Length: 146
Image (tube, rainbow, N blue to C red):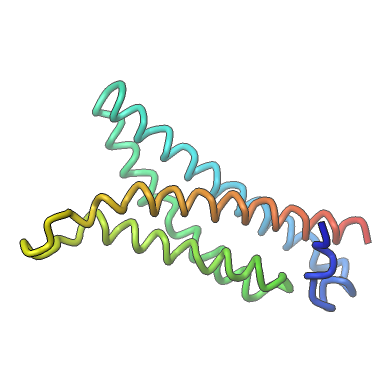
């Protein structure tokens, strides 16, 4: 993997004072991914076990969705590769699409409800979040080695 070739010059010439901030950013990325994992688990519990788990599913997204905006801001503030910035940008966009697919009602002319896209967007959100964890880990730990 040639991840080092993707890193901008400011990361290669990294200043030690930025390292703690990068680790905090990585911790926030992991936290977001864990919250998303818990949300997927609670929707499964609600559907297959007990519908009362649905309340926690809804509460989780309301509780952690703001983290996506912090990750977006941090990605564009910190010296991170474009790929990490693009992944962080995708999080609030996908969360917004998740919200729209559940709450937006399509006209009766459309035979299929928009909500059918909700699980597909959720899968994309989980994929983007997990990829962001892996990409950010490579950047933070590559910096620690320099």
